[in-house]
Structure formats: structure tokens, C-alpha cells
Amino acid sequence: MRGLRKYLTPFAPDQSGAVSVLFELGGIVVICDAGGCTGNVCGFDEPRWFEQKSAIFSAGLRDMDAILGRDDRLVTKLADAAQKVDATFAAVIGTPVPAVIATDYLALKRMSEKKINLPILTVDTDGMELYDKGEEKVFVELFKTFATEKYPVEERRIGILGMTPQDVSDLAAADKIRALYQQKYGQQAVCYCMGDGLKEVKKASSVSRNIVVSPSALMAAKYLEKTFGTPYEIHYPLVEELLPELDYTGKKVLVVHQQVIADSIRRELLERGAKTVQTAGWFMMKKELLADGDMSLRDEDDYIELVQNGDFDIIFADGCMERMTPEFKGSFINTRHFAVSGKLIGK
Image (cartoon, rainbow, N blue to C red; front, side, top):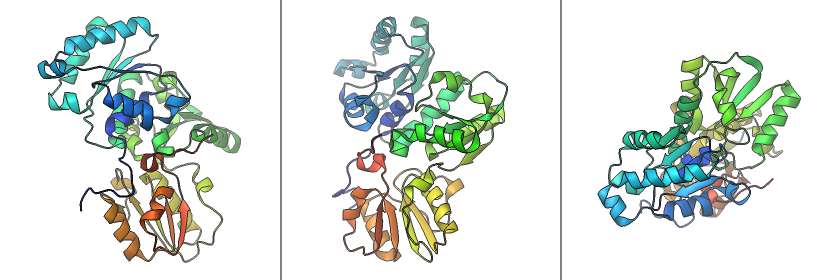
């Protein structure tokens, strides 16, 4: 049955991904809902909520507010919050409710800018897409709004695009990447939105190149290349720590993860002698990283049938997926993906 889930929990929706990108940047983030979507973000989808502070609000929409499209009340609430919170910008994140009533986000942005002396971002997420679609929209909007000045390029500065807990599944990943580039290459790695704040976003034109670590940031990398001429590469710098010491020679391997990490694992395993490496994913699959046989997964049955028919020796996937194919006799390597399992590798 299409859509039936017996093993996996529901994946985080696009508004949660949008909030994740903005979480550490010091802005007022308003989720345009009645309260439920905000509860999901803070209670389940954003692991940093339990360790860090962020000004995340619910618009608190009531039935008649939604039915009558009372955007002025939302603007009034936002203006009041801006007087009480020391913020660098404000963002309004869409949910199913404003999508149903066809909220005009451009008009909402203009109304807000007349009353609030802050940059305003509006994101037309609708709760019908997955978290990475929301991330993609916000990454692009973020750099379009704040990376407007051309700075001199510093050869030893590189940007890391796409760092969110949902994608890298490790709250220490940003620190590890900074240490790796500093110790191995003598370079400063700027991990946008995870450890490095809005100041670094504004100086995005100063990096010598960008490293894209998740598919949701690819569009932003293309925008920065077109705007400032900043080249980009697509790979995950910490891929080696995801690979246990095994003999991969001649093995058939399946990797299920977000596409950049999956492709990085593939390239490393092929160098180590793997016979074939096929990737699959529950989320966006960009054509730049697709190879023959790669598969976009829609339902649990897609994954189960892939494993049953693939004759794989090794599977890299989140541990919650192991029970989906109890008949698999090869090596299952738990490769945590927070967006799938809802669990997190701590520091």
C-alpha cells in the first residue's frame, strides 16, 4: 500500500528545514501557524533547541484570522516581538494554513518592513514538502538578502554550505570540519548556519570556494557562483569517519543517506575496490550526483524490494532501517541520518 509506514516515523516537513537553517543566526523566526507546527519543530525536529536559545515564535493564528486573512494582526505581533527581542532580522515561515488561504508573502513582507526596522524574510513553505525543500528555499533567500557586498577573496577561507543537524546528524560536525581544514590544510572553514552566524553570511563573497555538504545547499552554491564567481565542490569532508575498517574489495554496496554523503561514500568505496556502489535516498536527488542505478525512495516497499532484489553484500543506512529487511545476510553499517530516524549522535 502506497504511503503505509510500519517502520519509519514521519519525516520533518519543509517548514522545519527552513527553521533549521535560521536557528543560529540571531533573528526572530515566526512560524505562521496556530501552534502545532511550532511544537513539532521545538519538540522533535530541531535537536539544538535543547542546548541553545533561539527566538522562535508561533503566529498563534486563530480560525477567523486564517479565514479572513488578517495579516495585519501578524504584523502587529511581529512588531511587538521586535521591540522586546534583540534581533538582526525577522523571518516568517509558511505552513499548511497560509498555503490554504493563499497568503501573499510579498505583501506580508512589505507590510512588515513598514513597521519594523529589520530585514524581513518570508518563506513560502507549505508543509507538503520534506525538510530539504525548506532548507533549499531559505539558503537561497538568506544569501540573496544578506550577501550583497563584494569583499576581497581570501584564499585561506572556504565556505561550508548545507550544515544542518538533519543533514549531517552530528552536532559536533561543524567543529570537526573546522579542525580538519585548519590542521590539514591551514584553511579557515566557515560553516554557515551551524556555528558561524549572520556576519559570515554577509561576507560570503570573501571565501575562495564553497564546499556543498547537502543537496539542499546546491542551489545557493550556484547562486553564489553566478553572483560572485565563487567556485564550489560537492562532497562531505568527514566521509572517512563514516567508513568502518572492512574489506570492500569486490563487494556490492548500497548507500542510503542524503545524496551528498551517499555519493561521497560511494566515491571512497570505489577507490577502496568495491565492485559496485548504488545510492538511494528518501529526499531530493540532484542530477549532478546521479549515477546509473541510483534510486529515489518513496515508500518503505521501495527500499524493501531494492534490498531483496539487489544482492548486496554491504548496506550503509540509518540503524532504524535494519529491521525493515531481517532476511538481509550481509553487513549492515549503521550510518546515522537524523532526518530519517529522529535520533541524534551527540557531541
